[in-house]
Amino acid sequence: MQDKTIKCRDCGEEFVFTAGEQEFYAQKGFSEPSRCPNCRAARKVSRGEGGSREREMYPAVCAQCGKPTEVPFQPRSDRPVYCSDCYAAQHPMGGGDRSRHSGSGGSRYNGGGSRGRGRRDDRW
Image 1 (cartoon, rainbow, N blue to C red):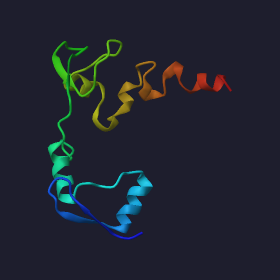
Image 2 (image 1 turned 180 degrees about the vertical axis):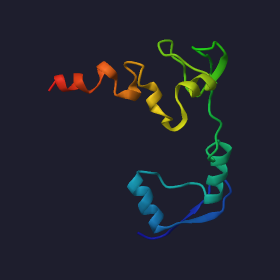
Image 3 (image 1 turned 90 degrees about the vertical axis):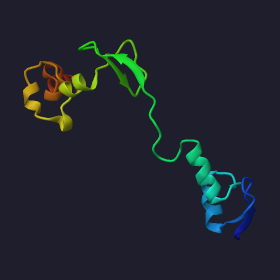
């Protein structure tokens, strides 16, 4: 495979599509580029693909305190949604001290209580 010179469809400048790039594009199943690297980068930025795109947020009402909030996912009626304060209270950063959850019966933090290991062993 040899380097190929291509004329950019946007600016009209010629650019080199190297043999290495051609091989990479072929492995990935990409079509040959029609824009030079500068025009491709400019197009990416104009389309919002430049790295820091604004995340779509959805309105919701906190299931615990009733405060209006926004979440980065489409809320479902069968699952509770919490504001950041109530969520943080329920899910300590980094796991926190899980021993304080040990008295909560079937909590996922303490092995599940009656839903934990003993029941799993009964199946074997």
